[in-house]
Amino acid sequence: MKKIACIGDKDSVLCFMAIGCSVFIAESAEEAAKILRKFASDESYPIIFLVEKYYNAMPGVISDYSERPLPAIISLPGASGSEGSGLANIKALVEKAIGADITFNN
Image (tube, rainbow, N blue to C red):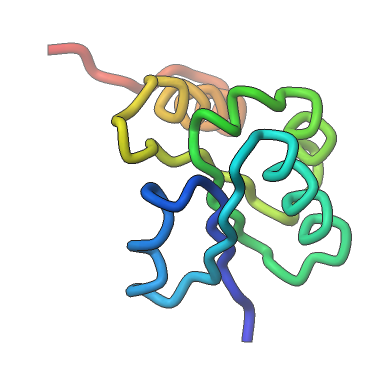
């Protein structure tokens, strides 16, 4: 059975245990990067959620895995709220996949 990992600070990720994610507490972006590299290299977690503040702090690490099909590394807002980059990343990926911006502004 494939697993989902969630990496981030304690306050942001503990709730993901309730839905069956494997939770990994990281106190810094460097610690989160080590955990991410470990799981990305052996593909034990095809989906890895990463708290947005760590995601934004390691663009080089994220880009190392961005062209690979697995793992899917997805940023999540932290306990303090969204920084907006998660939605921007998803928008960019959708635009790349279909070749157009499909967002609707009200």
